[in-house]
Image (tube, rainbow over all chains, first blue to last red; front, top):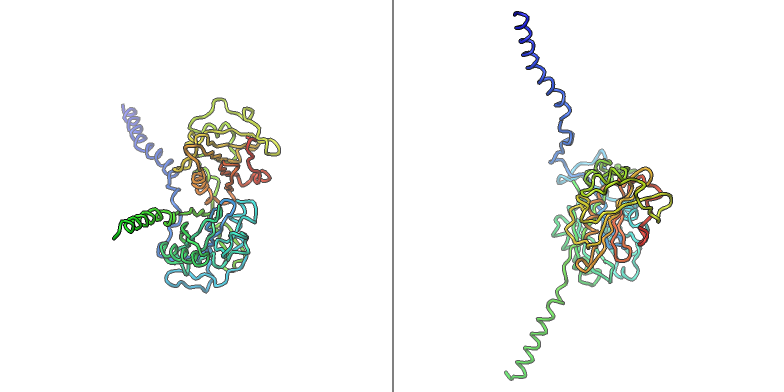
Length: 194
Length: 204
């Protein structure tokens, strides 16, 4: 009888311990690993991003090619934005063009999106401006593009500003002054993806 | 005011009313595609992808379809799988060197691979899955206009926009047209010499 009581007690003890052990195993594999391991600091200054607007003439597409540039050790934020380099070497622009080139397959179709007057007659990269096709996040929050259609070709200009509305308005003004055309086709995108 | 003058004013008024719509320029918003960002060092000498993307990011986008899958495994992931799918059951894709095979599905039966399209696609539009011996390497959207959908460019842009942010070390997205058909090809980054080959109408 005593042996039976002990056996019952052992079973009862096992019944209380084992489920907890069985639970303990899967729990450790059930961690919410989909959550990012690092929580972004929303008050951290915006890191420098230089965004190039690139046009694919074959498809009449626009790409916003974003280049994040690491801060130098001496850089300090202003207005909660990290400074961007004053001079951007051409290799950064070439890399931006590559986002189009790798998709269009031919270099002649990929140009900077700020175009000279008369671009429609000579649609090549020499009639575009690399400098005017990029916006830096320390000076602007939004890129605007405004275009007119010359047949099947979009002829565009680019502007940088601190709101989407302002970027569009400035791009349209630039396009209409430079191209001497109404520029009703517009687009805007934030400079930084952060 | 004489009758002639009134008639003239009415004519001018009608002319202006008619002229208004043609004067008003059609406002359009152009899509901007957003490739994966690049990260440069402070000296702007070296760069690398700013985001760490892997094959599982691609699979998340396509509802579980991943490069390297066999035809049978990929077929099983589709909403309406074909019975008896195997490598030998696939048709040869003639435009590629070596042995490349394919099968297709109508875009309406593509489930999550429709990529949340809202633009029209044309009833004859379809998707092609291309395989080499190592497995699935290219997803090709063929968007064919018809009377109900005379322009499939917006649909091609919508699909393309979903794949462009995928880094080129995972998948390369390309779009072009063959005749009136809009094509969007999404290719495995490891496809090597097969990558630049494009669809030719009539080849598959």
